[in-house]
Image (cartoon, rainbow, N blue to C red; front, side, top):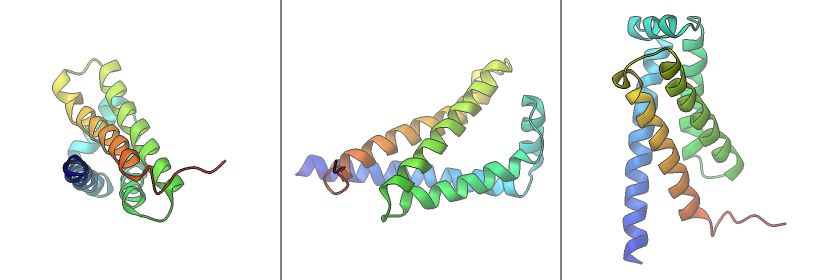
Length: 130
């Protein structure tokens, strides 16, 4: 049982870091920070994508923390998975250095780790019935 307690602590720490990072990034995107707009322009994206991503990140944080719907939680993780992977790919295809794509890679890794641990820890209470 001690291993399960350690796994829960790791899970909540990772999920907390992911959530705080996403909310911070969402704030920057929703307030149209100059650095965000410069990055979007560099990658070839329109400014309004900043609002779409900002709202999406806030909704994703709500989705991964809500306890009622496993499907909503999985969709939130899936959205984060593809948004962060898309950010990594955008930097890669733009020829950016590793340092430019590192934050997106960290978010991607935190998303994957949090999702895996969430599924592992809740598999008993959210088992699918066919």
